[in-house]
Image 1 (cartoon, rainbow, N blue to C red):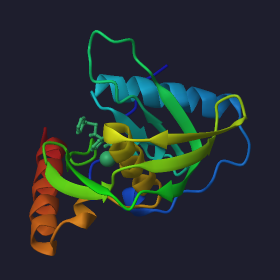
Image 2: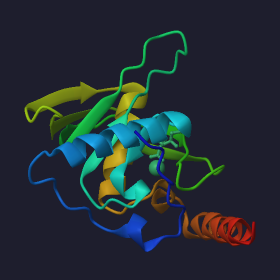
Image 3: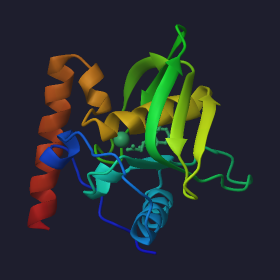
Length: 173
Ligand code: K2U
Ligand code: ZN
């Protein structure tokens, strides 16, 4: 298992439409394990493959917030939203590829998602609450969409300029 570097916005790889996974392989299982380790280390409650530079439709998440509760890692290959509620909810979102920036984003409050599981089976789950927000945030990543795309242009530009500055400083360090 290894912790992989997380790409920081702006980066063209974060804007790509990712390819579906054709068939599971030991490499993809290792990738999922590395993504979970990278997510927990960040720490985060979700991570999409393009955030570590892999342009595949794969995401991991664990939205259990109670540190006392056992972790509940989820690995979703080729996730698809098959239903979303008319009801919407707002959440102060962040992103591991846009560090230290948070903004209110409104999304459908509940979604039904279908995906290919680690053992090659098909799964479908009805997500609500933070899990629903997170899985939509991660699926957006697979389509090259970031949470700042839901903000007004001026706010998005300000955040992008801050990230460009952060990347210049990290390059000098
Ligand atoms: O995709 C990512 O960058 C990880 C995201 C996942 C996420 C964003 C917004 C709302 C829910 C999930 C986060 O950076 S993980 C850190 C985090 C944790 C709790 C709430 C917001 C952000
Ligand atoms: Zn993100």
